Structures are given as C-alpha cells and as structure tokens.
Length: 276
Image (cartoon, rainbow, N blue to C red; front, side, top):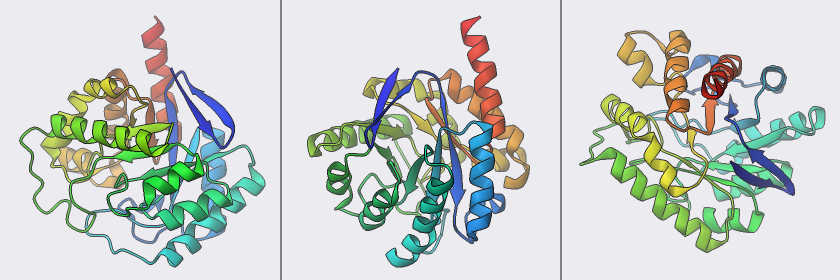
C-alpha cells in the first residue's frame, strides 16, 4: 500500500490504479489516442472517468520514436486549456501532466494538474527535479535510453533489468534529496528497448519492489505487442490486456493505458484471483 499527497489530497494506492492516456497531439504512435480539439478531449476524459480511470495523463508532446520536439509554448497551448476545462467539469479528477519540460510542468500544475509524469526523469531539463520539489507534487520517474529522436536506433544493454533498476534507484535517491516526497517509478517499456528487452523487463518487474515505490507500467498498444503478433497498434488491445495481466501478477501498481475499460476488467479479475 502506498500513499500520494496530490496537492493536499492524501490518496491511497491499495489496489492497482489506472492512468488514462490523453494525447493532445497530431502524431502520437496510436492514431486512436490523438485528440486535437477541446471537445474531443472532453469526450474522451468523460468516458475514461466513467470507466474507472484514477488519473488522466495529459500530454502535448509526442514521444514516439523519431518524434519532432515542439516549443514550450505550443506544448503549453495544447495541454493547459484541456486541463482547465476537464477540471471545470470534473473538479475531483486527478490529472498528471506528461512532459519533460519544467516550464510546462510548472504552468500545468498551476492550472490544476496534480502529478508530473516525466519520461526523462529530469535528464532532458535540469530544472525539472527542483521545479517538482517546489511544486510539492508526486513525480513519475521513467527510464529511457537516449531521447525520443534516437532511442530506438540501436538500444543495447549488458543487462537491461539491472540497468533500469540501478537508474531508477539513483533517480529516486536524487529526487528525495531534492525534496520530492512522492515518487512513482516506470521502467520505460518501449523507450530505448528492443522487443526482447521489453519482455525481459516485464519478467523482472518484481525486482523494482526493492525501491519501495509504486511501479507504473506503460505497455498499452506498444510495438513489443503488435510487432510480436504481426498486427497494428489499432489491433493490439487483446495483446495489451494479456501483458497487463502479467504486469499485475508481477507487481505493477499503475497501468498507463489507452483503454481504461479493458484495464479495469483485467484488474477486477486479477483482484478476484488474488483474494480467492
């Protein structure tokens, strides 16, 4: 069981949570997740809340392999109005801002976001960790080899699981030292990893319990699923649910997903199995 202080709300993770993905982008890898109008975002947010999402993750910068980096202003213009509108209609919603920019994180939290989700764990903006510490929000640290522009060029590890564990252990200590109290760790499936690396990480997921922090997994519709099955991201829901179930059995605390209803069903069945 873990607790998170989200802008004064003390929340308990005593069973797996769901983070619903809302990409306010034209170029995220899964076409079904791309929402470019405020009305589209609101419709998806309402659906995800009704289906049981604990967190809505709002991102304006695509981080798919080879993605183009946009300006801070454009990223802010994409995300902040959506955060404000969602909270206007659903004031109790827990929103995370998916960004590696400290400036975007600051503006988004000021607009109502309560968690910062950073794929680079502060490596792409040296101001990020101190900014999050000053904001007093939970921080999601993820492992990534390289940057979104080059991470899939030729990822190599002597031992991917040990590398990720060591990195997240060090990042957790760095964040604690800076004054961040609530830290979530994410092994970074698909971020600078081959298909084999991803499956190895999934198998060794229990090792991350050593860090004693909530573990989030982002497996939803990723290439490790659809390339292994010889299908497309649009066809990868069933494969996602299969890997989500394995992740839950290996200790995942948060599922970051495009498909909240399916993730909720997986958690319900996993919970029933666990207590039987």
